[in-house]
Length: 241
Image 1 (tube, rainbow, N blue to C red):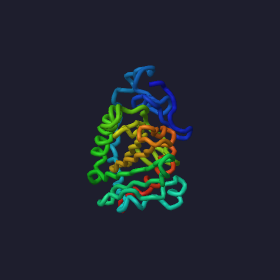
Image 2: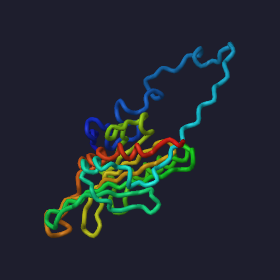
Image 3: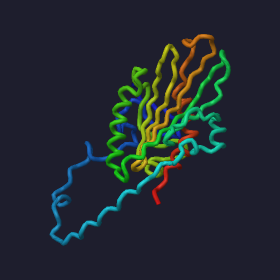
Image 4: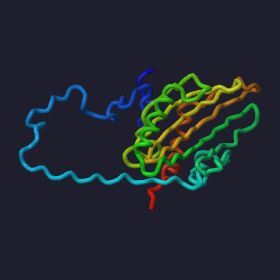
């Protein structure tokens, strides 16, 4: 895949690159170009070494009781998603949608969210699930798609930044086709401590009279929907009291 930015300038995402493949955003050091440490740097000191200080336990995060309540009315108006299309009975998931219009001018848009609280304060479990999810989605995010057209690491979404508001995130854009209808999807997966959040912005445009006349929304449209809603989704994940 051609190396290029696939998100807006404020959202750092590189397409078609492995983790750390974005210049300036990936991990630095440790491979090539750095001289080996000298013996003086690696040898233990003869002086007494202070005892290691135990590291603080990572914070435990809790998910909202009702996912459909995490977006304010103002946010939904701005994103043009006034309709609650689906509610997970458990409260962990929700989907907001627009009013798509009549036949011949049909433009459905939606954003779905699902919160996975993980296993208590076990960050290791969430890290493993995130890694496995990323490997799977980088290959084929949907059984109805041929694979992602864009993929990469997300350093910022909306006004939320990695290292400040969440720990890690990735994005894939793909198109699925069901019964001739094609729909574009922007899938954003975020890990915040022990919690994993999945957001899926999707939609299509159909100005004809046949299902096969429809076109999937672009990655840019999906990213705009995610930018408009991710802050509220992330803020709803709070530290346990």
